[in-house]
Length: 235
Image (cartoon, rainbow, N blue to C red; front, side, top):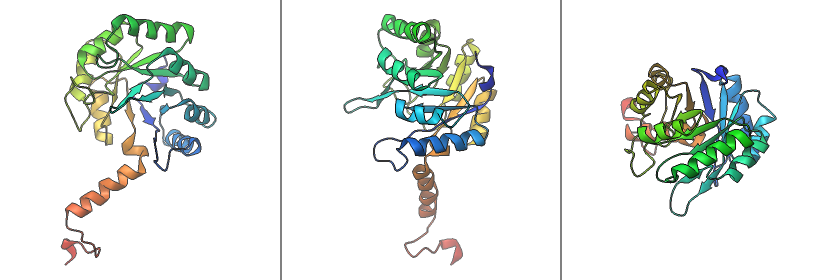
């Protein structure tokens, strides 16, 4: 296992649909910035983006291949073919969904993990939403188990903060646990590592300029900045 990532920061560099950053060159630039800032790895979606990132960075890339479900969220790397495409593009680790909601067949999930590890010779990160899903994925051979989907499935509680409780429960069970999802500050990242996370993945809070800007403008608006640009505190 690659110990260079232990207790470090992995930056998720992603943009979809009509987001202004949804271009391989932009995503690769974000990844390079993350590397220069000390990130120990990158998480990225699609063969095109991963291929461009690999030209620019020297840290491991966790690859995913998202498929949009009708009326639902993305399904992360659902098949061996999706995994093969991102490994051929340069992914060093394949992340896939291992929830009961989208991967209910345990034998099929076991075979998918086995194929990726043996036929593609690539480690697997299982994205889960509950403790039971994490244990199942680990027992089926996943090399890493991430809390990525906590709050995004029917059986996991909706949340706006990282699931530190789930991180601790999985780590205490001897599972190599990755904290991902809703991490929005260095303090939260540190809390995850202190709870047992092997490494921490942060995306929106670092790389989504639109979301970051909305955070600032939202606070200013809620604290009385009017359309004329004058704040109540300055009157």
